[in-house]
Image (tube, rainbow, N blue to C red):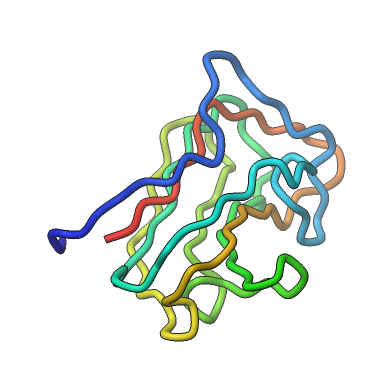
Length: 133
């Protein structure tokens, strides 16, 4: 871990926040653009996702992190599909560290998305954090 480290809170609640009918297609976390953040990633090297899953999602459901320069075109921070974490078990989940793509190393908008739900199961969360080093 480098000397540079910070955490961005996407969601921090004292009670559960449920995502009703989490869809299979990529969708903004709990269908709310109000959970976006602005971050300066010039010096960041790696990123991971930390989630407190209170009610499990569908067996294949995941949360992932994306960035954008204009809030219209979104890309994964590692340039592929991560960081990402399964939410199929109720527990505190920590994704593996992934390297940040060079093109993301600037001031960007950040959002969490869900994918691979089934449109029926309603996962619930307390905390969703994105950690950088």
